[in-house]
Length: 291
Image (cartoon, rainbow, N blue to C red; front, side, top):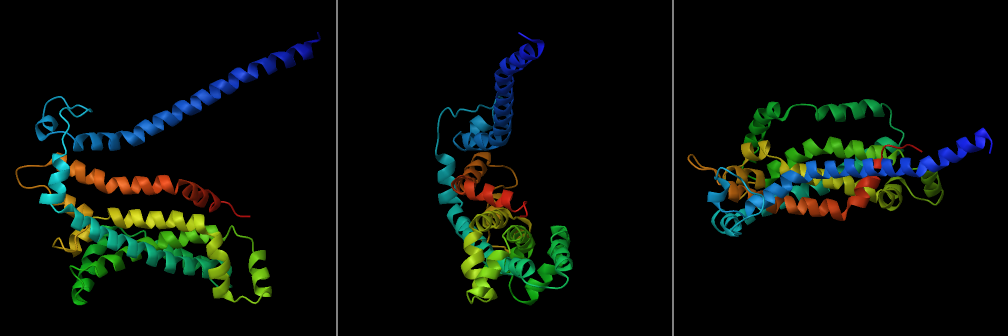
């Protein structure tokens, strides 16, 4: 056997081992990321089923012993968590649908229509989201007070739209840019105008991006705390983050009740991501590729 043949045989025999090592490292890295990401949620759910005396003991445990539903009873019966959930659901859904409607229209106009200075407009839209929220609370509170919108869901929805709309517009714009221009030309030849192209052609093709941006908008509105704390003062309009913050008192922090409430409001988000994960991945990846 020649030297080159021996070298090729050696390389061929070494490849399976190298491939196995690469896969093992990949799975090990994925497992570490999973443990790092899931550990807080696992600990949160475990805490919600433990008694208060177990949570304040010197040695915390992961497996509840004894197992209790006491904290879930407390948050629903004594602290009326369902009212906070309903308020958050109303605000988050309204914010999501309005942001998708306005943001997709803005992104379509900037991407598919002949608009001068589109990149300048995009920069202005992006710059709106760069202001720290704490600097906006005071001026927006004065405006909401003048318009008599304090302690209403309308105030939160309007503020959340202003916060989330730049993100929705940019993500949708990036996705629309990946769609071939020939689609627009073919639709115009068939007699469709701009709104028809947007409604009948572009939107159905943009389902992955709509799901991705919709989930991002929903999660942002669902978790927002600062504006909800500033603009609402009673349980009729307060959202979940404010409600959970109100669980504490001067002398005692009910860690079990907080963990139970956090588990309840986190579970729907995890479920949504798992259900729509294919659309989320597709929307995020295709938005970064221009054809």
